[in-house]
Length: 265
Image 1: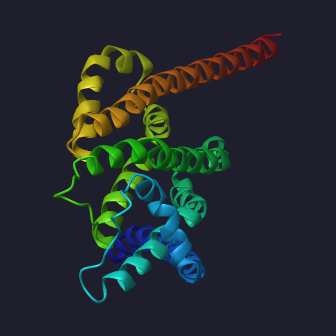
Image 2: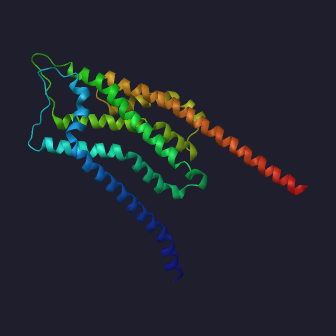
Image 3: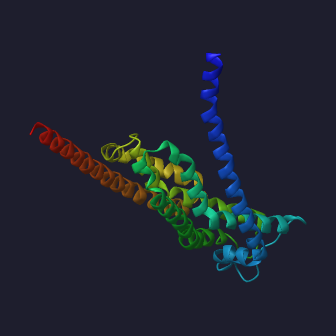
């Protein structure tokens, strides 16, 4: 009987954890679904915005095409879905924080809004950097291979896949300072280690840039340079966090010492 009770006590928290996960996933899916419907009504405008950097460098005799009957339809569906993810991203991040917050200390839970604001800002900032900086240089480089014999006529599906890969990759990459901050919070990294491993980090930066970008030096450099800057920002963020933690610990020690002195008197 005791074993059965213990087993129930062990399983209950995990069951409640799954229920919480299910509940938050449902809220996210509903929010994405509502936004998806709205985005689909303006799908052509959204796709036009997405293709503006490419259209600006395409020759006059070139255009975008679709090579199968349902390709345009599914492309618009994907555009609407990805746009809904971008628009709902603050709410998604809020739900992620709400899911992990029960395992945090009370003092750490107050970071929910800074987490949501900074995560959203860095993610959208990375995507906008890709759209306004990387796209024009990258597209101009690739379209430049066209000539009188070879004309660029790009498929809707292939362009969407290429563009979204870069937008998401840059959005995720720009989350590096937030990621490093939380690794430092749980004691996995510190500013001294980050400085010491800087040369290995630079090597890893160029490997990541080669994996997530097309095989050309320009686009890879446009990802590698911001990554190196973000790494330096991460060191600064972790250092500031360590100093704040040290000051807080010192204040706590002073308070404890003051209480002990009062008790002695």
